[in-house]
Length: 392
Image (cartoon, rainbow, N blue to C red; front, side):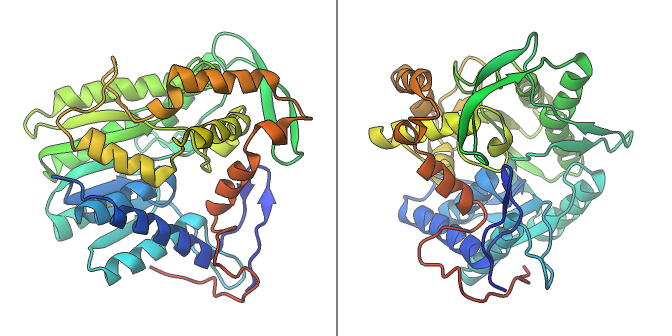
């Protein structure tokens, strides 16, 4: 099968197995060039392990600390006629590289919100690892089925307290235009918290602890994005923001609830990047295109793997982590500092349809978007016939 990208809206509906493998290989190569993670994790569970920050976390743990990694993801397997998801191919590639390098890895494919997958994961930990010393929570999903009631909750991307009008960029139409978002009602806020808040993170830790598979001095972290003034109306002062507040609540609860294993629980605030999740959020394609340009000029631009390596070495595994007033690990300072934000805000006020491609780094944005699905990667022959059916 010859595989070229099929883009619909803010997603790519196919993926390239060779390109995804090369993307994984490059991230592994980056970690191999860095200093080892001092006193890093040795047995790691990554919930949401197949793309973006979750995949980078698995790579950083395995290749930066020699950790055995157990991943949980929900990805679609390829068939003779259709490619698998990018996360499927990423996971297959990681398994291949890890096994070649003598590193233990295992992946469970299924709905991480379900108690069935939690039980399956616990059984695998008991069989292969005994206990785990790091739990990464990196799920991004528009829906969640409550395992107790069976009710399905849906998240909403809306402001809270009033309508909001701002600029955005439509990647389909190559158009900078204004967008108006109506405020969320109470039910939409509550459902977004159910999907994107801290309840499932807490449920994972509770069941792992009850099963006796959390090691002494175990750490856990959930990933978030906080942003600054330009993104607050769609993040901080919005349904997502309410869910992020619930993550902070969950972290505090986790820190106080498992003193017998001395559990450390953190929300980690990371930089805005092109991910399958961020591509769907109004404002973000325009904002990210602008910050990419500014941060590349400043020499401070980082991708997922660079951010996560610093999270391990400057956050999770250091005696002096960068914590804010809410006890979050802050790895986003290169983006959110006042000087960089002032440059971005100045560009935001200037940008129009006519000057967008001059002021913004949309080329970089689009390149990163394609990379998510294994496309546009140097050295990969996209006109070659490839086998889509890859297993792990």
